[in-house]
View 1: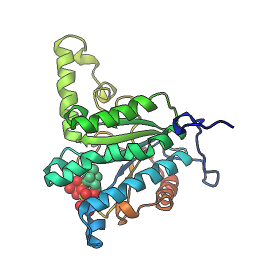
View 2: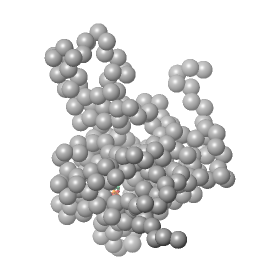
View 3: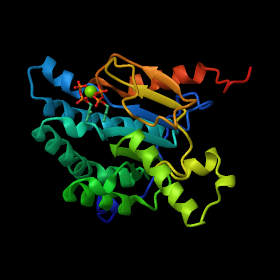
View 4: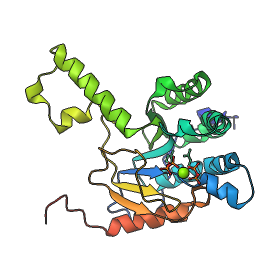
Length: 253
Ligand code: IPE
Ligand code: IPE
Ligand code: MG
């Protein structure tokens, strides 16, 4: 048997056969909140919570793949998070590189494709390079789409879409008469992605914090008091099972 470098292992889609396979949300979005409070409770610096949260990301990516979720969008850094102390922001900007350094081989093995939404160009060089590398490496994978919302803000996204759409109307690339909701969606970072079916927020806060305002118009919401570093595959499955029981009416009867 020859030695195989992890990158060249056969890709496989992992499966959870014990999980009811009907009515699985196609797209799950998560507001991963509570890292700071988790650390504070233990007398640790806030960044210790972010580090712990990183390992949970890996577990939930695996769980989502196993449950046959197709898209997992994770809110990792908002356009408002720049307001935090410089040292915390610097740490958060280093985390993607650290995460990918440890877990990219496993993502490759599990056929995960990595993408981002948000103002990518405004990220520090080192963050952008690490994430771009991961996007390039995984672009041929057709398993779970792992979509990081990085420097993402919904209002910024919508303003940007309006500006680009107006520019296209100005240059006659687009006619005002044909613009509808679908056209507008094409100008958002989430272009081509289905809307989230299920939105999860941890840490007890029940707000959107500028996350996917347009896209969650008809998403099912699921909140838990559990802080993100304590979130687990089991709790993720509880949310999925709850979703499976819901009746979505979209304004109908
Ligand atoms: C979520 O945890 C991670 C980011 C926003 C980057 P927080 O850092 O917001 O943790 P709390 O809400 O202060 O506990
Ligand atoms: C939302 O959490 C952003 C992320 C999880 C990345 P915040 O902690 O920034 O949200 P607020 O400030 O409590 O609304
Ligand atoms: Mg928070």
